[in-house]
Image (tube, rainbow, N blue to C red; front, top):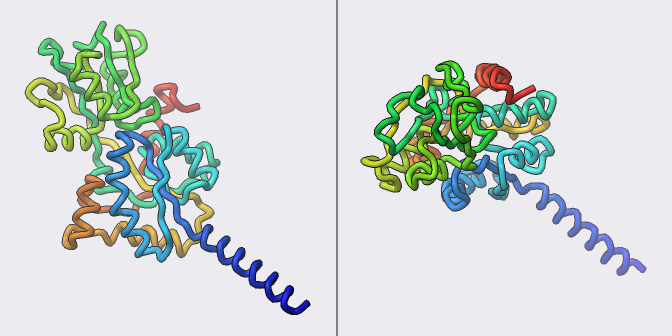
Length: 283
């Protein structure tokens, strides 16, 4: 009888241990604003770094679209999410204020979007009248919301003045649509554009920038407010301690297209919330 009891205790103990180990997996995700292979490439060294800093197994969990990234963090299916400013606003609203922006890149304090074309006749936003045009994802800050707000401010209503509006789903897909002539022009995040040009993945002699938006706040790494304070602080510290002075830090920062990471706060995204309401994209 004692032997059976001991075996039962051992089985229960092993099950409990397995449960704890399963709970220790720290899951991160990101809005799919680029191709899945590019997102996985960017995440790989960050995952290894966070594993060491947090003392837990870290896994990158890809999602199919922006809305899925929002739901994953709101429902605590992941612990950390890379959001654009608008996606953060949506998640914060969806959760009743329970999503906390943790850190942002220094570049996200003054982020911009670029409008691109292959058509020599397009020199300004006004030249888009009657043209086919592509945004990125409908939930993208830099690929839709902020460009739309600047177009509206400039007297161009995409839904009334453009011949056709398409949504490519991702920044690199927008570039492909413009380069192939599927649309006359498009708009995307400036850091993706700069990277594509630097990597010679776009012919900058054919596809050119004809308008760059004013600056606005954009991307951040967000967590759920229910995350323990100690874990949240350790996570924020891991990001802010990244430095190009170490090979590991240099690789991660370059892949994240960041000079460094800084603490951020909800108020930084009030302008995006206002723009979303004015554009009728947030109720």
